[in-house]
Length: 126
Image 1 (cartoon, one colour):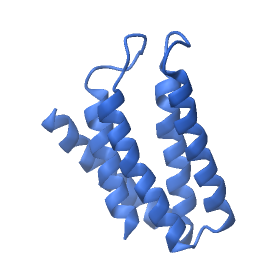
Image 2: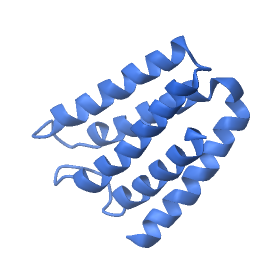
Image 3: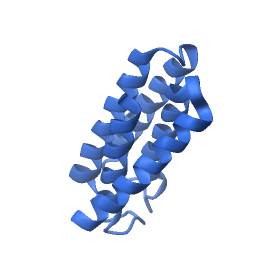
């Protein structure tokens, strides 16, 4: 698990650095779009629409709302920090939720994703 978290952290730092360089003042919008993608993975990886899909849908909806807000004020540092907090919260979601029995996600995925999320959050909060 520690190796997965470390690998995810390296990927998260690299992605955050690339996002900052490419999107510049619109980092919050890029961060939001990435968060929506991360939030969509769990419900999209399900084999069936069973128990827990409502929670995953709520996480996805929240990410979408934050991204919409980022689109209205992409240079506001408070929005960027709020999104960084949402990325960190998603890491907790990864570790607590993990893939369910009806998920197509491999067992190593939550640790890698959590490492990515925390590193991305830390870099984009600056």
